[in-house]
Image 1: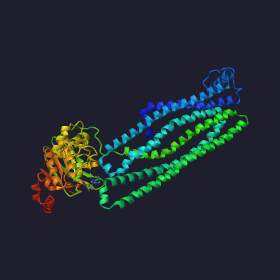
Image 2: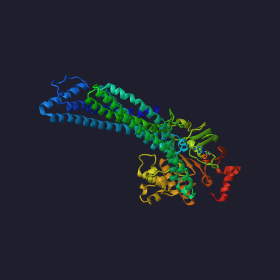
Image 3: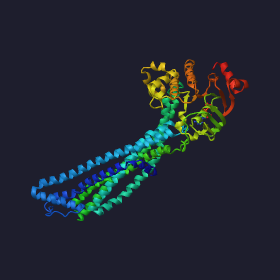
Image 4: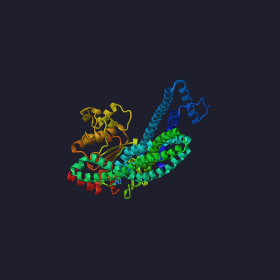
Length: 608
Ligand code: ADP
């Protein structure tokens, strides 16, 4: 229930709409309710029209009786003055008009409810997405991608389906039920009391079913997340799956999740199917018993026959809201399960947080310092007691066997993570005290596998920057040796590059991401194996563009091919998270350590 109220809180900004909705519902319920109440005078008039013509107009008072007497009086007068036909016409038209008006107001109420529900869902979705954006990289990477996507899409849809629908049931149905009950008591309290005694029995049975449903629903949505994950991995990894003949394996994994999901949802539907059948049957049983009890009252003369018929009409009207009320709550469990999954994401702690009190850092003037930095992702320390200084304007090479912690080191600099001990600072300010926006404005990253989006070349270059002129884009593309191939594409800068840049070659993709860095023009440049994935030819073009980009900047270059960093001012050799050696190329060759053996090995194998 806590989760439910939490969703309700999303509706709080729409108080005005809620009030209007409630008012319209109220008007509609009163109009329709009175129509059915007026059945009694109409019937009395039809059955005993001679007696039913009071001579005097009733005294005004605010009560159902007055209204009833007034209708009887008017109808009676009409019989006398205009004849039976006209009187009948008058009474029936009054009933129809009231009822139609009631339904018009019901429509208005529904309009306001639509506004509330769509806005609530919009806000919930926005908040979840915002949270996703502020999560640290590790959270997203360690989480199943499909699961996050399921929470953002189908879980939210589920909340809309079941939770938001109950907003309606929560207001309209209780109002209808209470008002109709009042009218029914007004006709016969004995009969109404009798009917009310039937209700708790229904409620208890429905609630035991729904408890079980909620448990199944949670499991089913989890399985749906697995299915999304496998589908996503299959779509992105199709080449590898085919190349390795792994279809069978993928199919088995998928089938397993698919059949479990199917089994869980089947159970869910089985139980769900019980709810309407049960409420339907209990409705009929209730009416049956009431007819028997009420019939006895009429027979023994405790209640006029017309009142009884009017009463049955009211009962028939109260069954629908009572049913939809219990059904709405029967459906709620699935939405609540989904809402809990969404809130799990919304409530996940932000490990790497914006500083509460930020120090301003507009430019990079002196140095970047790692002092005694140790870091682990899970248990094993990936970086151990790193002490390093990157001076402004110099080029640094970062080498070492794979897994030695090179990428992790630059990710700490980008503050994707915070070190468990020690600190990283720029110009003497700890990164933890710099706003993300200011920190990351100082840096550009070119990675081995460029991150491109399914958009035009122009937008991929301008990525993250606003108000960029075409001239700037072209200048950046030229500097990145990319202009030529871009103008040769079908629509030049407006060419769409496909999903993750699939329509371009590796070298072209890399040059676009370099153009992006040129345009951003930051003082600090991080190259993480930027040319490793390229063939010799495109490597030359890309490397050339990179050299241009590195000019007048502080560069940290992670390189597998040592030839690309021979000219670096300083080369840092990492092994198993420790700094093993540091110095320029000549110095490192001279000490004949790890760098020396890596370098000579590459010379021999020709892997420059
Ligand atoms: P390099 O860039 O030198 O190849 P990395 O910095 O990528 O090395 O990785 C260093 C170590 O940290 C490796 O053992 C790797 O398995 C581990 N590692 C990297 N990323 C993560 C992560 N997101 N979660 C857990 N462990 C990670």
